[in-house]
Image (cartoon, rainbow, N blue to C red):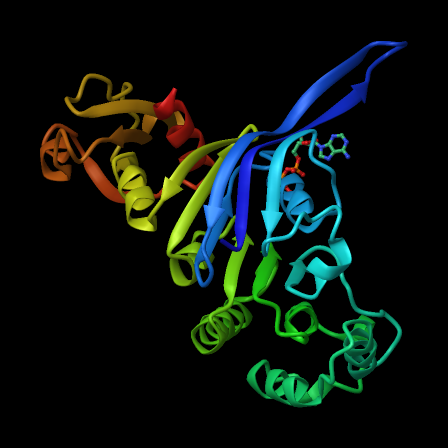
Length: 310
Ligand SMILES: Nc1ncnc2c1ncn2[C@@H]1O[C@H](COP(=O)(O)OP(=O)(O)OP(=O)(O)O)[C@@H](O)[C@H]1O
């Protein structure tokens, strides 16, 4: 196993007013295994515990209880050794030297990892199309260019596990696609294990064959994306635009009234495809002008999955 945790738990003590302290559990009894070569999406709402988990996986944070092994090593005790097996990309933070030409950061990182990165760097430069800005200082790169450089920096030492925290955040569609294509190819060619956190369902769809959902530090879902998608699909929301304002459309079988805007001229109904069909719902809606289907966002999905399990 590349990642193996058993009842992994991390709490933080927060100081309130005066001497009052509260303990909050950021990661709560997480037991999970990831095998070599898997690509796993680790998703959850803001504050669900994703970063805390990652920090424990790489040895930056010490667990409060439970155990964790990454690439067969205890991450806290063997952090340096582990760094040779793991590459980490934090979308929001850089591991590159801001004022140096991009090329120099790669040289420094190759020296730190004690690898002769020349051949690998050539490969990464070509696959990630870094050639045109290798001599540009990092601070002058566009976000998309910088992210590609970050990924190259994390992969320079050919790690067996790559952890990416929000790798596509803020990227335009084309940059996102490029990065995803690169990661897919990297995994195919080298059998690299991927663990990524993201708020972008597209990342999970394209890159991952397994999804872990965390909510309030607890594992709420572990399974295929198809399973996750099925639970999303059962909770679609119909947005109905009516010719004129109308009373709330409550009581249509198989639907739940969610809310309305424009004095009732636009209404939202959650509908369960297992219980009814769109046609049957629409037959009961007078004066329909337009219709769209809203897919719930990932945080919504996470919340639902979690509440369904309790
Ligand atoms: N050093 C810390 N001290 C106190 N509380 C912390 C600390 N680090 C994280 N937390 C708390 O632990 C919880 C989990 O945070 P974490 O950063 O792991 O969430 P996350 O899922 O990565 O969120 P996001 O998607 O916003 O990055 C949050 O409530 C956060 O406020």
